[in-house]
Image (cartoon, rainbow, N blue to C red; front, side, top):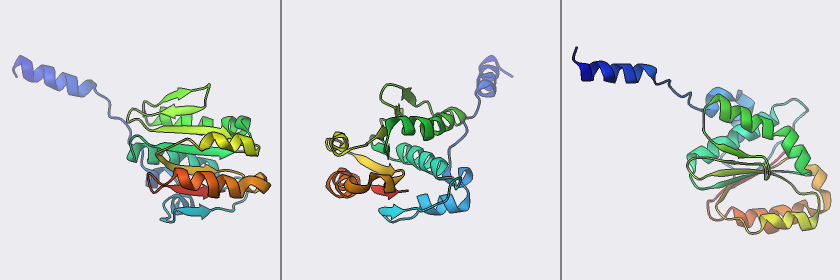
Length: 175
Protein backbone atom coordinates (compact mmCIF):
# COMPACT_ATOMS: atom_id res chain seq x y z
CA UNK A 1 0.00 0.00 0.00
CA UNK A 2 1.40 3.37 -0.91
CA UNK A 3 1.87 6.12 1.64
CA UNK A 4 -0.95 8.37 0.32
CA UNK A 5 -3.46 5.53 0.45
CA UNK A 6 -2.39 4.61 4.01
CA UNK A 7 -2.79 8.23 5.17
CA UNK A 8 -6.22 8.45 3.58
CA UNK A 9 -7.39 5.25 5.30
CA UNK A 10 -6.04 6.48 8.63
CA UNK A 11 -7.85 9.78 8.24
CA UNK A 12 -11.17 8.06 7.50
CA UNK A 13 -10.75 5.65 10.40
CA UNK A 14 -10.31 8.50 12.89
CA UNK A 15 -13.41 10.40 11.79
CA UNK A 16 -16.34 9.48 14.00
CA UNK A 17 -19.68 9.45 12.28
CA UNK A 18 -22.10 12.05 13.56
CA UNK A 19 -25.39 10.68 14.77
CA UNK A 20 -28.12 11.96 12.49
CA UNK A 21 -31.14 13.57 14.13
CA UNK A 22 -34.31 11.99 12.79
CA UNK A 23 -37.71 12.69 14.28
CA UNK A 24 -39.10 9.25 13.48
CA UNK A 25 -36.33 7.59 15.48
CA UNK A 26 -36.45 10.06 18.36
CA UNK A 27 -40.18 10.39 19.12
CA UNK A 28 -42.83 7.79 19.86
CA UNK A 29 -45.74 7.45 17.44
CA UNK A 30 -48.19 9.83 19.18
CA UNK A 31 -45.55 12.56 19.47
CA UNK A 32 -44.52 12.02 15.86
CA UNK A 33 -48.15 12.16 14.68
CA UNK A 34 -48.60 15.52 16.39
CA UNK A 35 -45.41 17.21 15.17
CA UNK A 36 -45.74 15.92 11.61
CA UNK A 37 -49.41 16.82 11.25
CA UNK A 38 -49.58 18.97 8.10
CA UNK A 39 -51.98 21.47 9.70
CA UNK A 40 -50.41 24.92 10.11
CA UNK A 41 -52.31 25.50 13.33
CA UNK A 42 -52.91 22.77 15.88
CA UNK A 43 -53.48 22.12 19.54
CA UNK A 44 -52.55 19.26 21.82
CA UNK A 45 -54.42 18.65 25.03
CA UNK A 46 -52.40 16.11 26.98
CA UNK A 47 -51.93 14.83 30.47
CA UNK A 48 -48.81 15.41 32.51
CA UNK A 49 -45.88 13.21 31.38
CA UNK A 50 -47.29 12.80 27.85
CA UNK A 51 -43.99 13.81 26.26
CA UNK A 52 -44.97 17.31 25.14
CA UNK A 53 -41.64 18.91 26.02
CA UNK A 54 -39.60 16.32 24.16
CA UNK A 55 -41.88 16.60 21.13
CA UNK A 56 -41.64 20.42 21.13
CA UNK A 57 -37.87 20.42 21.43
CA UNK A 58 -37.45 17.77 18.75
CA UNK A 59 -39.76 19.57 16.33
CA UNK A 60 -38.02 22.90 16.92
CA UNK A 61 -34.61 21.31 16.26
CA UNK A 62 -35.83 19.40 13.21
CA UNK A 63 -37.38 22.55 11.73
CA UNK A 64 -34.20 24.55 12.41
CA UNK A 65 -32.12 21.91 10.63
CA UNK A 66 -34.46 21.56 7.65
CA UNK A 67 -35.14 25.28 7.15
CA UNK A 68 -31.89 27.27 7.21
CA UNK A 69 -32.05 30.86 8.38
CA UNK A 70 -35.40 30.53 10.13
CA UNK A 71 -36.57 31.20 13.66
CA UNK A 72 -38.31 28.80 16.02
CA UNK A 73 -40.07 30.04 19.14
CA UNK A 74 -41.00 28.26 22.34
CA UNK A 75 -43.23 30.57 24.38
CA UNK A 76 -44.59 29.94 27.83
CA UNK A 77 -45.91 32.29 30.48
CA UNK A 78 -42.62 32.82 32.32
CA UNK A 79 -39.08 32.87 30.95
CA UNK A 80 -37.99 30.89 34.01
CA UNK A 81 -40.43 28.15 33.02
CA UNK A 82 -39.02 28.03 29.49
CA UNK A 83 -35.53 27.75 30.95
CA UNK A 84 -36.58 24.97 33.29
CA UNK A 85 -38.84 23.03 30.91
CA UNK A 86 -37.56 23.01 27.32
CA UNK A 87 -34.07 24.55 27.52
CA UNK A 88 -32.44 21.40 29.03
CA UNK A 89 -34.10 19.23 26.37
CA UNK A 90 -32.74 21.43 23.57
CA UNK A 91 -29.26 21.20 25.11
CA UNK A 92 -29.57 17.42 25.34
CA UNK A 93 -30.52 17.03 21.68
CA UNK A 94 -27.76 19.42 20.58
CA UNK A 95 -25.17 17.52 22.60
CA UNK A 96 -26.38 13.98 21.85
CA UNK A 97 -26.55 14.50 18.10
CA UNK A 98 -23.49 16.77 17.88
CA UNK A 99 -25.44 19.49 16.08
CA UNK A 100 -22.90 22.21 16.92
CA UNK A 101 -25.60 24.73 17.73
CA UNK A 102 -24.34 27.52 19.98
CA UNK A 103 -26.43 28.13 23.12
CA UNK A 104 -26.80 31.63 24.53
CA UNK A 105 -27.86 31.50 28.16
CA UNK A 106 -28.58 35.26 28.26
CA UNK A 107 -31.38 35.23 25.73
CA UNK A 108 -32.14 31.48 25.81
CA UNK A 109 -31.32 31.02 22.16
CA UNK A 110 -29.75 28.18 20.25
CA UNK A 111 -28.04 29.25 17.01
CA UNK A 112 -27.38 26.58 14.39
CA UNK A 113 -24.54 26.56 11.86
CA UNK A 114 -27.10 27.03 9.05
CA UNK A 115 -28.27 30.34 10.54
CA UNK A 116 -31.46 29.06 12.15
CA UNK A 117 -32.20 30.13 15.72
CA UNK A 118 -34.50 28.76 18.41
CA UNK A 119 -35.62 31.24 21.08
CA UNK A 120 -37.20 30.20 24.38
CA UNK A 121 -39.21 32.97 25.95
CA UNK A 122 -41.80 34.01 28.45
CA UNK A 123 -44.77 36.24 27.73
CA UNK A 124 -46.65 36.92 30.92
CA UNK A 125 -48.56 40.05 29.91
CA UNK A 126 -49.74 42.03 26.92
CA UNK A 127 -46.74 44.39 26.72
CA UNK A 128 -44.38 41.42 26.85
CA UNK A 129 -45.95 39.75 23.80
CA UNK A 130 -44.97 42.78 21.73
CA UNK A 131 -41.34 41.57 21.61
CA UNK A 132 -42.36 38.99 19.00
CA UNK A 133 -43.87 41.58 16.65
CA UNK A 134 -40.61 42.49 14.88
CA UNK A 135 -39.47 38.97 14.05
CA UNK A 136 -39.33 37.62 10.50
CA UNK A 137 -38.68 34.20 8.97
CA UNK A 138 -40.45 32.46 11.85
CA UNK A 139 -41.04 28.86 10.83
CA UNK A 140 -42.41 27.27 14.00
CA UNK A 141 -44.00 28.51 17.22
CA UNK A 142 -44.93 26.46 20.26
CA UNK A 143 -47.06 28.11 22.93
CA UNK A 144 -46.87 25.93 26.01
CA UNK A 145 -49.51 26.08 28.73
CA UNK A 146 -51.57 28.16 26.33
CA UNK A 147 -54.64 27.99 28.57
CA UNK A 148 -52.76 30.11 31.13
CA UNK A 149 -52.48 33.05 28.73
CA UNK A 150 -56.22 33.67 29.13
CA UNK A 151 -57.09 37.22 28.14
CA UNK A 152 -54.30 37.86 25.65
CA UNK A 153 -53.85 34.50 23.88
CA UNK A 154 -56.06 35.69 21.04
CA UNK A 155 -53.94 38.83 20.50
CA UNK A 156 -50.71 36.84 20.80
CA UNK A 157 -51.74 34.30 18.16
CA UNK A 158 -53.96 36.30 15.79
CA UNK A 159 -52.32 39.72 15.91
CA UNK A 160 -48.67 38.80 16.31
CA UNK A 161 -47.70 35.14 15.75
CA UNK A 162 -49.78 34.49 12.63
CA UNK A 163 -48.17 37.47 10.90
CA UNK A 164 -44.65 36.28 11.84
CA UNK A 165 -45.35 32.99 10.03
CA UNK A 166 -46.14 34.59 6.65
CA UNK A 167 -42.55 34.54 5.36
CA UNK A 168 -42.16 30.79 5.77
CA UNK A 169 -45.75 29.53 5.67
CA UNK A 170 -44.88 28.36 9.18
CA UNK A 171 -46.80 26.54 11.88
CA UNK A 172 -48.15 27.48 15.32
CA UNK A 173 -48.94 24.78 17.86
CA UNK A 174 -50.65 25.35 21.19
CA UNK A 175 -50.22 22.87 23.99
